[in-house]
Image (cartoon, rainbow, N blue to C red; front, top):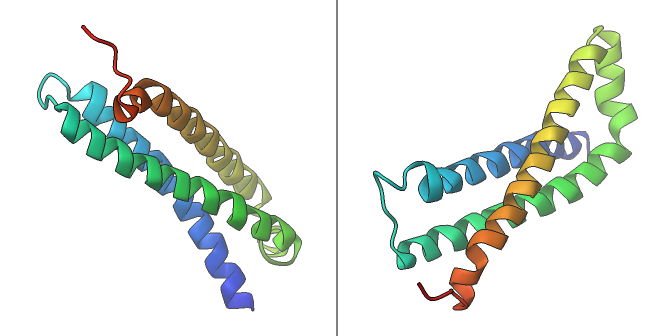
Length: 126
């Protein structure tokens, strides 16, 4: 059971990294690289769909893994960190990861608002 809880904790951190990386790449494809790499609607549709499902999957794992992690927090992370004098580092880590998750959720909602209409076919005519 201990190994499963430890793996959950690692995958929980990994899900935050995947969420942020995914959305940064999506932003680069749609905004930052537009001048150099103009995506047509078909390409943007594929990128959007993949980015959306990676983000949603990451957010789901963050929620589920976070619940498991919180439940076992006192037994695994707190005791070990307190014994090694790492409570400040642990607090900083969780603050950064929480901030990344909030930014990732905000970027996901923004991405859905900006590009979801292209997928649904309700694109405004130029």
